[in-house]
Length: 117
Length: 112
Image 1 (cartoon, each protein chain N blue to C red):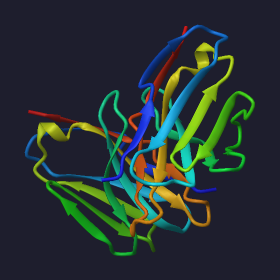
Image 2 (cartoon, rainbow over the protein chains, first blue to last red; image 1 turned 90 degrees about the horizontal axis):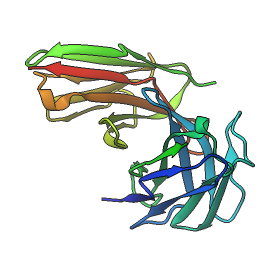
Image 3 (tube, each protein chain N blue to C red; image 1 turned 120 degrees about the horizontal axis):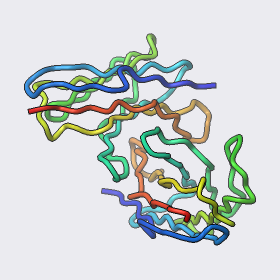
Image 4 (tube, chains in turn red, cyan; image 1 turned 180 degrees about the vertical axis):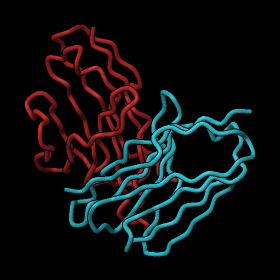
């Protein structure tokens, strides 16, 4: 089946540094990818929609200058958390849809757990 | 604004029992998804429900969709310990560029 891969799966960084998370669709092309954030024991909240070749669309309340999204190819989207702070510690999950599949099922990456010290 | 509510949020049950998780949503939608999440892991897709009256079954889990009532159910039959996890329903926003809105999640614990 279709696979979405994230890297790194875990990252620990110091406050004030920037962290980049990659999301790749391994066996399909994705013009759109989605970035979610999940705090402990909570649900997933959509942060932004990553669009290949154009600017990302951010949800209300998400700072676009803090969470930089780049979708440079049909198989790769990156999320950069700039000047990370402890409150940015969370589980970040990306998803993508294979538009050529009939059901249009969404596939989720394995997630990236960010801990900011 | 689309709201998705699950009920119950916490469920502790014994092996062998049956139970149902409910997912209500507030506006019209094309698709409804059910996912399973184990601690520390990402989401595992369980079901995609595409039309009114859709029913899908996989093992001890069965999901259904009533678009008129804006309600989906996830039914667990003869629960086993391995089904302990958090279950999320998610609803796709109509005309919303494939965005999903998730329910709060139901944390299911099945005791031997």
